[in-house]
Image (cartoon, rainbow, N blue to C red; front, side, top):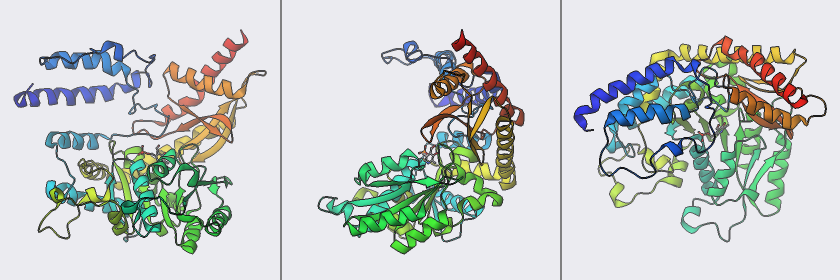
Length: 475
Ligand code: PLP
């Protein structure tokens, strides 16, 4: 295939994509496959000569599509959503065609300047004050790693990158037990070490970190000669939506001069609705905040918005300027690779620009409000059904529940088997979690294509599969 064939095959690919999405509801959400089933169908050695695009596309449909889990499926209720709204897909097609590398202003001026403007649109949409500057990272994991590296460097007077961490007091990072595993990974990679990530108890209906315990841990560490570096606060934790009282955590951070990073990777998208902003009251006092438009807002993966009150600290931590990256005569321009761990970067702003313009903020708000309302209705139905147990109440559109296991059956085993049986059934897709040490089924509504009927169907589907499972066990 060469350039002259691009228009034909690109048009076919776009048409295939539209048909695929229109027919998603007819497919099982997760394919009923055993590991290795796809790899067995792919040639083990690469071809020496080029193959016809017709053959390649036919293999794509035959081998790949049946092996995909369908994240745009209307009954995808697992993990968190990864919406790719049509407007953002179109932008991604254009970005793919241009194939630009957007590491420096001069390598793609429009990409850089649009990123500055569009992250500011998003800042306004989320109700963050105008002191915050934004950058689009590939993932929340990267944003949190950048935040942890910045807190480390700030605590060390920006000498850690140069001289390393040997012979330094132990750096300490604080978070609740509800934070995502990307925080653990960030402290590994930053050389701080897992033992120096202090996971504090959380409690109350929102599973907020215990601010008094947080403060006591910081004081004890200082007294013991350790070096507190920063706090990661959680708004909408992955397991069941654990949410800190950010204002209380910000008070502690301010009293001890610590960096505060807020992880709102999933729940942050809902903050475009003013009525949900009480979930992160105090966020304006954070040093950095991460919100993933690639989860609930509709921007195709990857698109993680990282807001900073003082981007200079991040740039001092991550900027490196060898001769081949210098941009002479361009003083004052933003070079976003200096705000990120990787050097190379995609043109991520275009899809956000297309998305926000195509839906308008009101359009996006109404999608999110529907999801929250429908999840509440499903949770109500489950809570009043004696066969079920509501384990944690909805935080936005996320809650957890169980089907009551038959007598003499280990309830955790039953819950995990039930999740697997539901996902093999294929009508809906759910995942499990652990709540206070016990297995629970996790539900979130967030797919742009979902309807109220899709959401409410979970009650009947899980009930039916659970009754079948219980009967099999009894037999
Ligand atoms: N933070 C939270 C609360 C999450 O739920 C997730 C992923 O689900 C992440 C961070 C990591 O996100 P990413 O996949 O963008 O690294």
